[in-house]
Length: 152
Image (tube, rainbow, N blue to C red):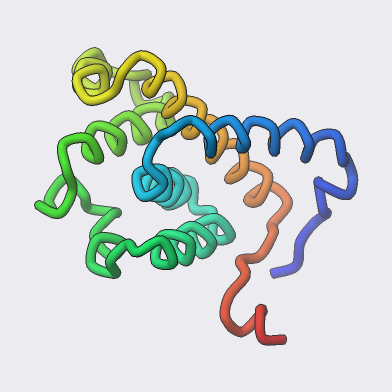
């Protein structure tokens, strides 16, 4: 697959704006492993190969197990995730799949039980951010960085 265009070269101010939100999310205090699960799960839903490859690699580098990453797509049926992670994943799915009924009250209540107001606002920003990245990468067909492409 060949990229359609490089949006960051086409609009450098756009990259600066997205990078500013990324800086906020990264400095929010939310746990990095939790954020990587959220990024990976939204990217799976959106079919963003670039972000799936990057966030799986980042999660492994941060100490995430292959087993938890392998089962992320079926997290509801796997006993490997904490209540906090489950609430974050349900929140991520609800926000990513808005056309399937918006965010159900029970998903909000579950997230509210695991996250402070600030954390929930910052978690929402993380989901907004990864969905934005996914849309750029999918729209412009930015290929994933694989071991083969990094070696070339």
